[in-house]
Image 1: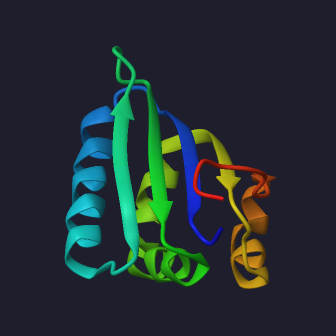
Image 2: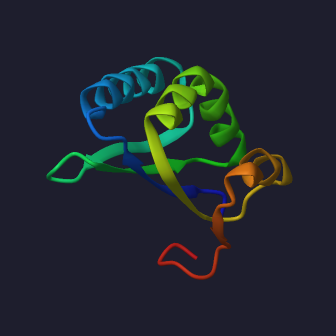
Length: 117
């Protein structure tokens, strides 16, 4: 299975939720404009807007690398406004993706079984 799924959770610094959401909206706009292999890119906020979770899906590792390149500036802005980032990746990741995400100490779950296998 080539599809990659991601769950990204981050806590937002106090008083920074509006600025964080502004950058988040820009990320969504850039994904719509530039990404070719992004299947899902959905943002969720806790009721008190102190935490955010992003659910992402990509056709394959190449699509995920494209996504990271397209958003590199905006992601830096989000990371500056947040803390306690937790990343979980699902799927068979290329070595290039593994190297790119290694600094974030993610959890990685390789493909097991699905309805489509």
